[in-house]
Length: 306
Image (cartoon, rainbow, N blue to C red; front, side, top):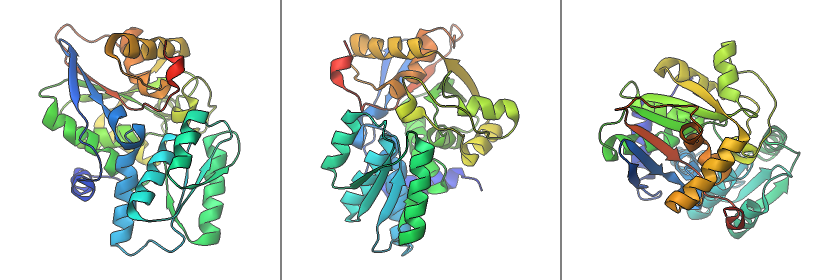
């Protein structure tokens, strides 16, 4: 099972007018931000959710039971938003550790919320059970072709908006975003995944030669806390030469504060993780290297930014 550039292009046509074409800004010579935190529901996830739902609706696969989804927050918001916009019922399974800021936003979207377990994997098991019992459409957080293709539209926009660039830094949880971006960009630039040391599913998979289960923790676990890398992400990483770097929690916290103080961007910890590779020195660009950082999520408590 793979996702092609043609799948990403088809996704771009399918979701046009339903998602925002988010801006890029040059913040320093050779450094550009892709502001995906300005996307509907505060993260890139709306792209994949719309692509999955619209494609299923076009194929006649949407039942009266609507959709089920599991997420630590951002995918939940995106799936609920897309379902509301398309007039489809949504039941969303979230871990009991989901931040209050995300739960509050989720409630405003009209979805049924079910608290299940302490981490994403347990919520996902509950969503699968609900799918099997009800016949609802399962909208995976990261490991479905239509989800990956939808996220890949970020990469298509970068190719059109950012001019020439050498490297894209992307935060990684389950891998849907980096799989899509790597598929869209191909070998036009290097794509580097940035992961918390305490939630490093892609780093572990690349070292082991296959996705493997592992522990999840740290400040960004609510959005990057996948126990296992998706198969689609692993395939894309191997095909397109993606590599991973790891950042400590204190570097993520510092990068988030810098995004706010230096650039007035209110990012969540997961949204600041890619930038942490630069601010911590874990990734050091060459003197003339042109780098794009995807700032991918904004669902955070603003009172914690100072």
